[in-house]
Amino acid sequence: MNRRTWLQLSASAAIAPRFANAATARSAAEGVEQARGEIRRRFLDRHGVMVDFTGLDGSVDLPTPDECRAGKPNALGWFQPIENGSMFNGLYMDAAVNAWRRSRTEADAAEARRLMEGLLLLNSVSDQAPGFVARGVSTDGRSHFPMGSNDQTGPWFYGLWRYWRDGPATDEERRRIVSHFLATAEAVIRLGWKMPAEPPYPTRGTFAGFGFDDAPRPLFVLRALHAMTGDAAWERRCREMLDERGPEGRTRREVCERGMVYTYAPTHAWTSCVSVAALRGLWEMEDDPAARAAFARGLAASARLAAGGLPVYARFDPADRSPFTTDWRQSMMPLWKPQADEREAQALAQAQVREFEKASPRRRLENAFIREPTAAAWIVSLAPDADLVRSLATEIARIAAHYDYSKLHYCTFFWIVDAWLRTEVLKAE
Image (cartoon, rainbow, N blue to C red):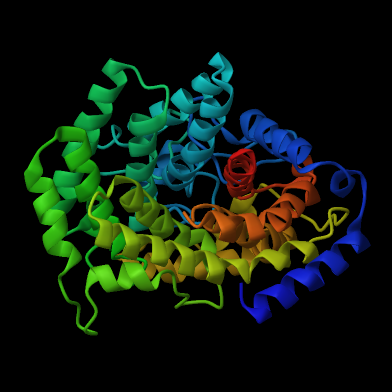
């Protein structure tokens, strides 16, 4: 841990008591149990797919089938309740599987299975684009927005692999997972590692780049395909891609070894954790000592960078009652217009969210002071360096205990569940 991170962590320990209340006085274990309960109560829909936000009573205003078809509020599906189902299901699967491995209860097995079925559903709703992974589903359990993304499809692969490898999967479930995984990977590869989208949009997002947010993802998919099918051709292809050199001169191996970097914002742990998870999966599956060591160094570097964002949690006041409305239509739909392409859809969505945040200032607070530090905590916990993770375990426990999860509108605290579970495993070793 560098001096700057140590100072930030020390400062957060001093700030947190300002917001001491019943929530922050409890244990991390109690906080995590409350977080899990809120996810089951409010954020998992009847199809086993996570929704982004709800009312505190669990009410959620889903886009209608007609709105999905018309691209309302925007064709990307951004900033409404079914924006990130495949992403969040896939990433939260890590927590669900680890909880089951710890307890071996039927209830925890059922929760992981529910997430798995949700992931398979999201890959089964398109009749137009083979390999398409939807963000979520509308009131009819099938209608969806026409564009997913690399940040939706990457976690979809990761979550299914985690359930297949470490979860309570039956033989029949493993066969179904491999079938979906293989068909989707082949469709993505046919498109040059781009994600399928539905007409009139050809694709949305890619795994083909050489930045950190790209490089680990195709490698993980290929290595997982080898593990699932036993076909050595997938491993050979992974080795070839690993040492391909990008336009900036780095190979994918070197990009993975350098670890996470922030590029488009001061921090974006919540999206870059997708690639950190892929890198963790690569490390777990790797049997070449040199490559495995390179992946471990990348995970450690990612954890050290993420650690700098942990203290942000202390800036969130659990007693804050800034307004939030689940009525996204009221602020977003007045700006709606038809969108000819992805660029127009993105411009519309960015204008819409500014209006949404005027009506719901709570959104910005939860994103900045809950979403980022909890995602950062998960990144830390994924590092194989046990001493590094143990050195930050107390801070992760503080984060877990800090929030009253029953008063949060967004589900984007879910990362803290697995971060805490992973540190607890290390304590027991």
